[in-house]
Length: 377
Length: 96
Image 1 (tube, rainbow over the protein chains, first blue to last red):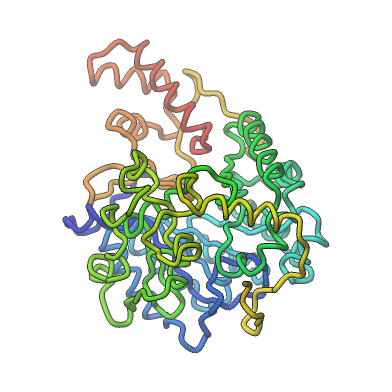
Image 2: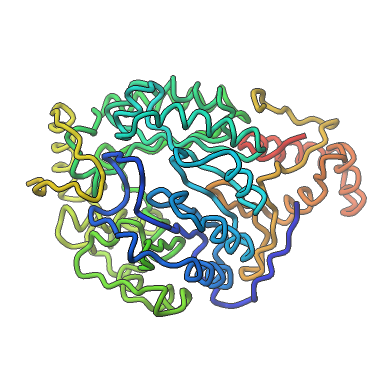
């Protein structure tokens, strides 16, 4: 139970990130239209090698990173996932596999467990098989996921179900919670999707109404009380219906770091959407040096750069002005206050868009390498 | 499997669940609890309690041994650690 962590005691650790999102690949058999990957997906030919990742995890452990999310795309696409996981385990990092499950078999999962994988997070699109497969753009996905969830439990691994919420499942939250309990999950994430990248492109076919979101909040409150000690539930509302912005990433360049499939080191997984930022690559520099000195991290670190209304706001050190990517999308300057904040002059625009588009209908632009559509106006 | 809430009392023999790890974070010189998507920073007292939660000793025994170590009233300690463990259990981190 108690394990010593053999990191070099180092003053760097005091300012080191705690979490690492490792996007091992952008390849994925699913095509969810709200994928959090960037619109410009990185091709497999440029992906980091096994040895690159092994070195990155050594550097991450030395730096003081405590948790890694092995994600994608679909991380199990990588045939070297075992060696990559082993490197993270060897570095003393808590390992979380974020998977769609559809490519897994029980032997591979058992192998990952034996290597020391700590936790599995499995995505579930809907409790209705047909709708689930339609959202993911992948036939048979739902039934495979149920099977994978059973394997996870049979192998004694802890399970989180992750059901991103939007218009097409927002009315099924109670069923999703029951589904999680039935499968023996310890945790359920029912975060409403945020509208960046693919989700932004698909916003008018995904965004629910404000009433729907707030009814969800009531359902979660009731379920948390009823399921204490049985199921933990994480719930997040979409920014468009929030009053206060989320403390994005716990502060830019403060707690988390993302590494893209080709090795770009990002302050958050959507940071590439901010034009003008330059990202260093783990192929060229030590992760520690990038964390401490990369211009992309330095630019919005802390709160000194924030203009009003943040500058004079009492919550500045609580929410750090919200999300830089969203500020950029709506104001053209990532240094501005996130329009999710009611104090932003753009806040009313955000709400108006949400209210209008929650009544629209449109076909999904599925997430795939070949998808193209003229950008929304 | 985990279909019922665990209620902690003096006879419970608590342990952290297998996937919840109490570790010393050497770089930051503090103890941490690593759990799925969570990093908790327990205070010194909680760390002392959790180090004794081996799934064999009861809450009553743990309170007794802490009372001796810290020369403090056992009933107060038992009440405090029961509350603390119940809270951790309700977050899904404790088994018995």
